[in-house]
Length: 178
Length: 174
Image (cartoon, rainbow over the protein chains, first blue to last red):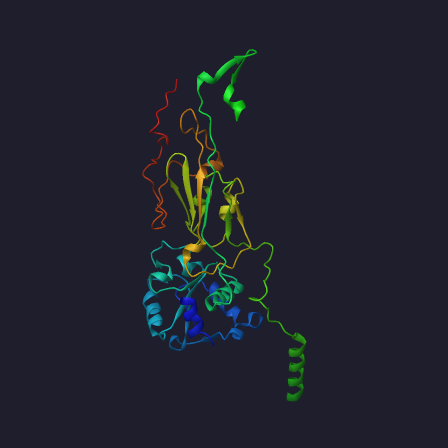
C-alpha cells in the first residue's frame, strides 16, 4: 500500500533534504557522491534542496543526538505531508558504534518515523540509489530475515557397561557403532 | 581568447563522453576486498561466542536456552561491516560477502538467527580444560541477552569472577 502511494505521490520527482544529526560526515560524502555525474541521480528526478519545507524526502545521517534531536524533529515537522524518511548508514539505522554513550539517544527512528533503511558504514553510493529505487518500486528488495538451525546429532551415553575386554584391550563398544 | 577557451572546454567535455553508470538497470561489481553483509554458516559454527564478544557494535547476541541449544542472533542494524567477527572466528564460519544492496523498509530483514547445538561432555555435563589465548576471548557460562528488546546484557548473573563456571554440577575429584 505504501509502495502504491509512493508511486502515486512521488511519481515525478523527489526533492531531497539532507539532514545530518551528528554523524561523522562519511555518509554525507556518499550522498553527495550520488549527485555527481557518475551516479547521476537527477535522471530519477532527485534534487537536493536546502530547506525541509521544499522537500519530499529526508535523508537522515548520524544517530539522534541529545543536542540535535529537537532540531531533527522540527525539520521533520516542517516537511509537507506526504513525506518519506530514509535512514542512511548504520548510525541512523541502529545508533552506530557509540550507541551506548551519553550524548547518543539512539537510532533516528526513536525521534521520527523512518520508512526505509539503508545499512552500511558508509553505504556505497550504489546502495543509496538502490534504496531510492526500492522506495520508488523500480526494483524488489533483496534482503529477508534468515533463520538457520543446526541438526541435532545423537551422542552415545557413556556407560561402563559398554566397556569390554577384547584381546587384552579395553574397547568401548558404542564408538564403533557411530 | 574567451571563444578559444570556450572551444577548449567543449573539446574537453566531448572527450569525456558519457560517464554515468547504468546502475539500477545493470549490476555494478564491487572491488574484490569489499566487505559487505556477514554471512553466518550454521554447519561450521561451534557456538564459541567469540564474534559476540568482539563485536564493537554489540550486534551479535547469545542466548542459552538450555544446556544443548544456544541461540546466536545477528541484528545488523548498526553493523559497521568491520569484519572483526570474521577475523576472530576459529572455524571461518563467518564470511564477509559482497552484498551491499540491503535497503529495506523494515529493519528486521537484515537479521540472522542461528540455533546451535552445543554438545557437552557425557561424563560431567560440562568440562573445561586450561583456557588457551583464543579461548579466553570466548564466552563463559550461560548468557541471557535480551532477545525481545534486542539488547546486549553486559553482566550475566550466572557467571562470577574466580568461581568455577560449572558450579551447579559438583564433580568429585580424588
